[in-house]
Length: 113
Image (cartoon, rainbow, N blue to C red; front, side, top):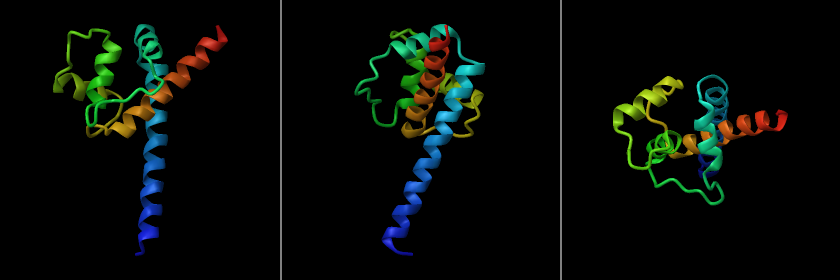
């Protein structure tokens, strides 16, 4: 296997993960999310928004809960991500795609109102 073939495989895996994250975010927004959670997510300054490396799954929960004084514990995080179909803790790329999918759904709903 050449370096270029390995790069192509990694790019394909990254694109697949992104699509899965976006789809999961749309499904969560459509079926499980509360309007207040989506409003908090939409109100977050997304321009240049960066999760701390390796902490996106925790930071997302903190954001949608709307309580900056409460850092979610591992049980909170595993419960949420397990509830949206993740068998393992999602990586940062998946969480960022999840946010994009959820916001895409929320913005499409707001446009219809």
